[in-house]
Image (cartoon, rainbow, N blue to C red):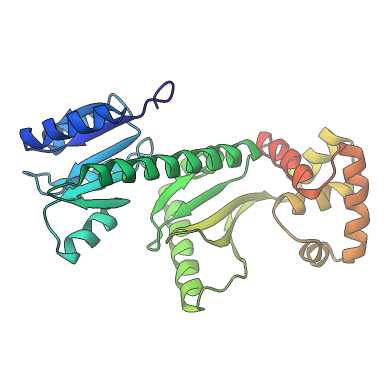
Length: 304
């Protein structure tokens, strides 16, 4: 991204007059402008730099704006960059195609420049908020990812990406298929708020997938957990100086389980789980389960 408060905007348009108009208006609004005259030159630029936002003409010689956007969104480095389509088309089908291709908004030509500047500011603010949220999630060490309604990956925390990247193609396909089934079941149940988990056995370990629900848009949030029988709890016991039972409780809390869920898994009462948690908080010097879970998650990540 850019240094300071200046945002870099890449504008892609095959019309030289349109590029000149955008340069005058958006440079005056305080943006650093970079231009490309077609999709291929835009993709070549994006291989060398990362703008804060992309303005993309929909109708260009092949690859058109829709195909260019689809290619942009296949690159994990570029997926989070907001793309605003510029089009002279008012047909709803083209608007939908742009959004399905990965665009966040569109403006119609002739462009109302004041409106465009306002939309750019809104989407830059949203992108900054998303980056801050993802950074906070990264710090916790959680394996989180988001997909669209079709199950295609939108973003993931680095530790989730590392887990997925270490799996073979067959296992990745199984995870993708399970995610799609969870989305279909969730939507079929009229947006049930209940978290649903599924486990895929992989030799001496399991991958647990938990559907955490939907975000503000059409995205679905998932948590991944890699479970190896006894390994994580033992690592927690060694690293934190807690008892074997406390390490078991802390492990399941770090997996996002409630006291009731942990009690059922461990075949003890929820009250006993709570008592163990009280001792864990004291020994770790924390005040709540979120802080304890964050510590445990970082330790577990080092065991993998």
